[in-house]
Each structure stands twice: as structure tokens, then as C-alpha cells.
Image (cartoon, rainbow, N blue to C red; front, side):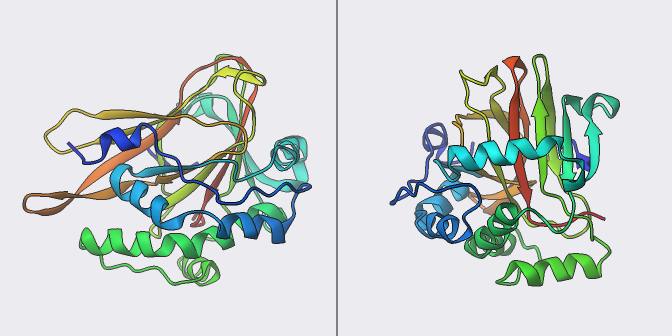
Amino acid sequence: MQRARAAAPGYAACMSMTTELHGRVTAPPVPAPELQARIEAIAWPQLAGDLDACGAAVIPKLLTPPECTALAALYGQDDSFRSRVVMSRHGFGQGEYRYFRYPLPPLIAALRESMYPHLVPTANRWHERLGLPVRFPPQHAEFIARCHAAGQTKPTPLLLQYGAGDYNCLHQDLYGEHVFPLQLVVLLSQPGRDFDGGEFVMTEQRPRMQTRAMVLPLQQGDAALIAVRQRPVQGSRGAYRVNLRHGVSRVRAGRRHTLGVIFHDAA
């Protein structure tokens, strides 16, 4: 993984942020139409507000338990992946992860393509407020074409696997010049049943202030939408940028699987 090891308003809201799903859909594994219905039912304006306030938002039960189990079971299927990374060999932590190859599994491709259009308004608003010239097209295929034209052709969605004693150091998932400013993390295992410990952790580095830590409480199937690198915060003299990183605390027992969906590809 090409990784960069890199007082905001709304802090109280950050500690309990969730975005409600107005309808609950029970479905067998990998049902693209029903997944699309769940995505459309997300309260996107509330989610955008959480992202603006905290740089992160939790979507409860984005995936069903059967979908989570089916995705986690892919980890042992070599033909689904292009590479495997053992974190301890690179100083990234302990544990391992595998990058999917193209074509992506249908459920992961559907997440990437269906979530992206809802995130573009926030991404473009953040870039405008930070004075960054890049704007993002409305459809994911257009953005991926931009990545590929710049030599970023390797798919970045990945499965992460942690055992007892494993952890993930704080980092940012950048991978090249073209970076979509938001990414999706889905917990595939159930805390307290499949593993203990292993909390999803974020830090926010603010100018001339001490770094703030956030723990996002996730259950199986919950998703966290997070800032990849930075977000704008309104100050007395206009917007300024704060840098964010994410990681996973030490797993005390059991096995933890996570799906990461990054919207840009890698060089």
C-alpha cells in the first residue's frame, strides 16, 4: 500500500454520529438492486453534515450479515486478488491485507459506483473551500478514466485481516496524484463475537492545537465514510485545512475482517 503516514466545530456530534437508514432491507448475498435501494435510502444530507463537522460519518447496517460473511470468505481465494501485503514487513502495523483485482466482485463494484455520485457534492465543496482546483465528475467511471489516463490503473478496494495482537498504524490512503477525498470502510466481523478490541480510530491534526482522537463504534455491516487526507474547517479568517489519519487499535482476541473501498485507483 502506498500510504502517507500523515478546535473544530461539532465535536460532541462526532462522538455519536450515525446516519440513519430509513428502510431496512434483508437480502441474500450480493443483491445489487437491493443494495442500491439501501444506498438510496441513506439520509445523505445528514451524512454530509456529519462529514463537514467531523470528517467522518457512520452508516449503520449498510451490508447484511450474509453479505459480510461472503465478502470475508473471499480472503482465502487467491484468484480474487492482485497482491497481498504483510503489514509488519513495511512498518504499517501487524496483520495483512489483499488488494482485489479487476473485475471487482459485483457487490464491491456496486458500492463504488453507487456511493460515489452521492459523495461528489461534498468532495467538490471541500475542494472549493480549500482553494483546490480539481473538481470531480458526477459518475465514478469518468473519475476512474481520469485516474487511468494518469497511470493510476491498479484497483484499490481491499480486504484486511487481523488476528490477536494485530493493529494498523495511523495512515492515509493516497496512491497517486488523483485522490478522491472520501473513502468507505465496512466492518465485516461482529465485535464481542468474532473479535475483541480492534477499534476503528481516527486522528485530526489541527493547526497550532493538539491532535484530537476519535473512535468510531462499528458493528458488523456498519460502514464508516471518512476523509482520506484532509477536510476544511471554518475559521475567523476563512476555511483552513485539518489533516486526518485512520487506523485500527490492537485486536485482543479473535479475527477481524474489514472491507476498504477507495474510489481512486493506484499508480
